[in-house]
Image 1 (cartoon, helix red, strand yellow):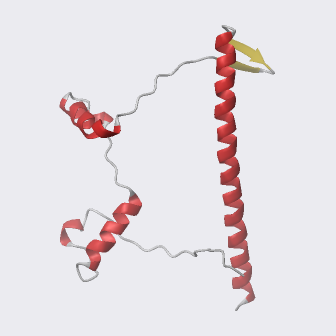
Image 2 (cartoon, helix red, strand yellow; image 1 turned 135 degrees about the vertical axis):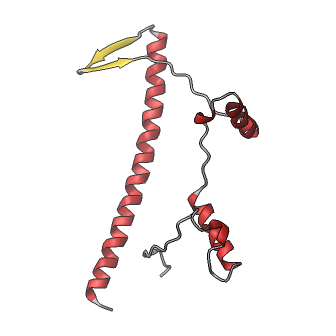
Image 3 (tube, one colour; image 1 turned 90 degrees about the vertical axis):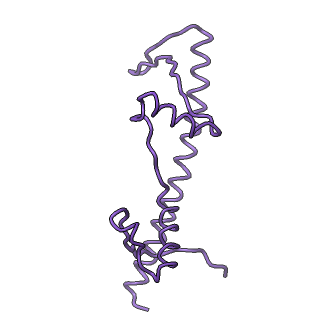
Length: 137
């Protein structure tokens, strides 16, 4: 094999390995942030401290309401929001991987061409990339 290709392959593998390590580290840091934030909020609430400044940074105890739909009622909630005039809150999405798999199936059933009803609704393109997998020695 060409030396340039092997060098690029090594570089790609190294970069992907580094990316994975950084993603794992970020996940760990986010977990530590959540835990520390929770513990600080409890300490502030117990001492009835609304805010304080330390090392040039102000820390404020805040409460935010968060709401998520009940999974089994999500469709009904969306319909009710639309019926009550709040449809702009509803965003329908399609997972891109699922859509790609669906379109691939539809094309396979249609002599490898996009069915007419999908023309103008989806953009089909190919992306060439290199898959990297560990091998056993």
